[in-house]
Amino acid sequence: MSRRRISLRQELPLLVWLVIVWGALWQDFSPGNLLFGALLAVAVARLFYLPPVELSGRFNIIFAIPFALMFLAKVAAASAQLLYLAVVRGPKVKNAVVAVTLRSHQDLIVTATGHVISLIPGSLVVEVDRSTSTLYLHALNISTPQDVENLKNQVRSIEAGLIRIMGTKEELETVQSEAGA
Image 1 (cartoon, rainbow, N blue to C red):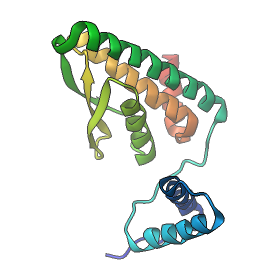
Image 2 (image 1 turned 180 degrees about the horizontal axis):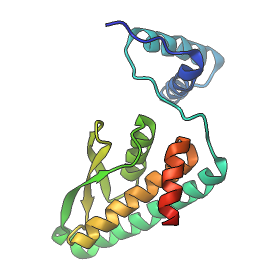
Image 3 (image 1 turned 30 degrees about the vertical axis):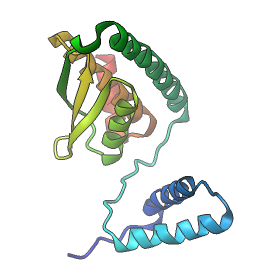
């Protein structure tokens, strides 16, 4: 099976990201190390099949800054809640695996949503069904159907924030129409 040719414009963000990861892994951002990382990134992108990262062509910094601040607030609040659960409730805490179907079918949005959720203490993505854009989350302190709905709403809220930042125009219209309803 031959691989569809991907334009440099489409592949460039992946290559830049691979070079940044290379520098971070080696903790060396010298020009020589980054050049070697760039050569490796091109080799990896050409030799191994990597599904193309479909970018929407839009990035809204006006939504990115509040989203980052909201994320930091959620990390702090969840850390405090986890401390309380560990110290006060201990092994009595109930856990659950919850399936959340996302609106977006873009790999980038699904992956970013999963990473943001996993970085907030108390929940972790254990499985992703790419065909239906469903995240399966292991979450702490879930004991009622209302807790399940709250978690689903939190995940959908994070996904909506990411769509506002970098989703397609169609996804953005969907999120805006749901917010207006």
